[in-house]
Image (cartoon, helix red, strand yellow):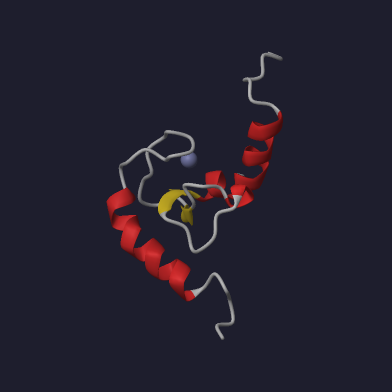
Length: 84
Ligand SMILES: [Zn+2]
């Protein structure tokens, strides 16, 4: 058994997708993903929405880490905030 369940397969998929991801817009925030930025492997279907496996696309690490909160906010509050 691998030490880290996210380890080997995650790294393999990330390494395969990363070269093609540079210069393309992040699927979450729409800003380009550039070399030198923290990029991570994410899921087209959020983990909070039932995704399994190592992920299938590259996105900013910071965007990736907000997965759970984003998905839950989307469910409970679909309309964009107009508080400001
Ligand atoms: Zn992003």
